[in-house]
View 1 (cartoon, rainbow, N blue to C red):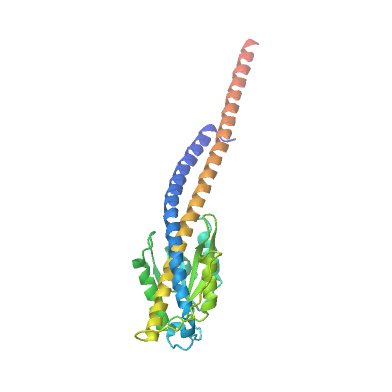
View 2: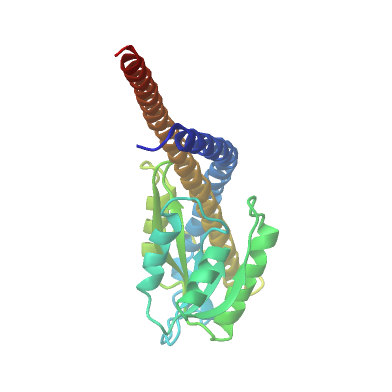
Length: 294
């Protein structure tokens, strides 16, 4: 059995760790609430913009703009949205399982240091890496979107797909992959968006009215498609931020609880060791007194 000094030092170390994880839990809780609110507030706008594009589907059938045209896929373009820091449970590990299943010909863009490290470590083609702060303002997201759109227009990549962690609730975050470009299967896209962001009562409304575009239909639709991609990527980054802080809060709470349980076990072990030491001393004193009396 370990001596009381070693057990006492372990108890002190675990208590110090518990203080750290408790503080990290409180910080993550504060950030989680803000991130969840930002993610939920942006969903309505993302759905509305997608519905607008869906209502124009009849005007998109014969348009020759690059965003709406299928082409042979030589290199998939994958944006991976991960965290900058760890201590968030299995969030990044689950995300990278999707990345691991993507063929080696794909080209990657990362948001978050964990993604860039994983892509580099697995010797995949990393075109660029970006970092976004906790608030994820659109001014920081814009450079990511502009790089992706420019790469798509220059045919460096033939698709724009997003690998991210979808926020379901505080305890559940699901890794997903979503294709944004080309915008060909609009009905399927709208169904997925309503299933992910909408409520059960949401109804997809189609506008049968004839639409007049000014000045040029192709320019309007191209700008609308670019706006949709920008808004969608921004929304998915907000979803990933909410997932990150939720996962970190849960992980730190679990670590704090485990540290508390370990302190209780070590305290019990310390008391037993101390009691055994006292008993041993009493026995030694009794034996010495008995020997002197003989």
